[in-house]
Length: 267
Image (cartoon, rainbow, N blue to C red; front, side, top):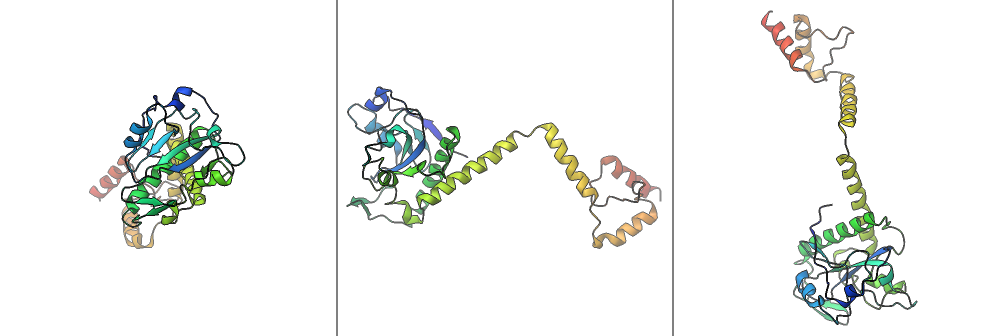
């Protein structure tokens, strides 16, 4: 997963100063509810005392900025109807919204869906990448109930205050939280495949190459080469390997190429 991730901890925020920790059991996705695409603006506003909110990261279109250690307890979910809070269990991040709209009754007013599609696609890719990275790091299954949720879902589960994000925004692009969880799981699977490739040893590579070459040896020649093969065999340019196999679909070595040229020169 290609993720531009940097750190700017909110060390002046009272949440950071409290120093409470959690054992992450999930990831909660938020959106800022403000038409402001620059994460730095929020960091400047939140990195001070007496700010009663704090998340672990801000996701922008071009990058992700981590603002709390992942195992530090954030202030992002509030308290749900069950009396429990995802602050005690979930890592959180805010998705920065593009410029150009306002809110009324929880609805985005003046939001241009098509004009903002490139912005959303880039931001969504970063959100998937960050969530996949966190799930891998803390051994979380994004498809398990209650693991990867948005603020609105947290309210429905009784572990967050009554907010509608990100369901006021993402469905405009046909993206549900179920789709997001599937995309996170796929990103984790793809990352695992990349790791397996990175772990390739010379010994394993040699085994795979030997197997590949052996399979090519067993392949029969193509019909289009029949006249050329008949001529080369009759002229002794291609003699085969002694057991009747000419290995026409195998690769030739330099010495085999030289031998064929030598035979041709002395015809």
